Each structure stands twice: as C-alpha cells, then as structure tokens.
Length: 139
Image 1: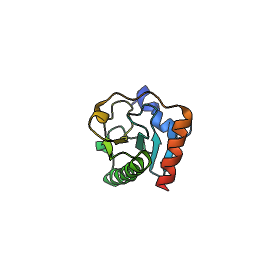
Image 2: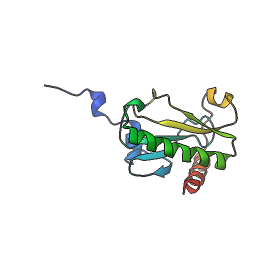
Image 3: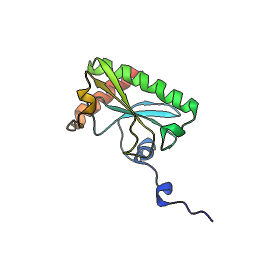
Image 4: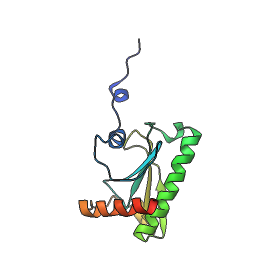
C-alpha cells in the first residue's frame, strides 16, 4: 500500500496564494496561469508568473502550459518595463525556494540587479500601487 509523504499532502505556498488562503497582489489571472508580486523583490515590480497547477519542476510542465506560462511572462515583462521605466525585463527560473514552478520577472538596467540580494521590502502602499499599475498595464 502506498502512503503519500507529508510533502505530497501539503499545498505549496503559491497554491495557497492562488486559492486565496494567503494574501497576494495579483496582476494577472486566467484559468491556468497567475502572476503576483513577490514579497522579496530584486527590484520594484518583481512579479512571479506561476501555473495554477502545482507542478514542482518546470521541466515537468506540459508543452502547452509551458508555452502559455512564457507568453504571460513576456506580457508581464513588457508591463514591468512600462511601469518601472527599466530598460529590460529580467527572466529567471531558479525553482528551489518553493516546490511549485515559477518564473521571476523584474525590471533591470544591468546584471548587478540580477545578482544583487533582494531589496528591502516596500511598504504596503507602494506594493499596492505597483500591483494596480501593473494590472492596468496588463489589461
């Protein structure tokens, strides 16, 4: 008889945010992908693009979901550049912090912003403002 491990029974923190069990500042949502601001941004507007389906490794996503996740990440990247005035949008997959596929998208003007530690947290009003402006830019 197979007994799932406790890890297999627990939802990821991202699943809890998606389900509304934990707060999140959403800037995009459809049936299969969401995007919300991270609480540990590298730069203002740092957004996580996450499939609704809880899949640990991005390499295990279906090709269709992977393509859609990237299409949303590209839209988010454009919105981040527009809202923050940065030259580029950085795109990063690390996948070790939370066992749920996610793409980091954030504005960057140089490599130093990609390799720097997370910035000090913005206050709630600044985060709410960024989320509202990004959601508006994403339509």
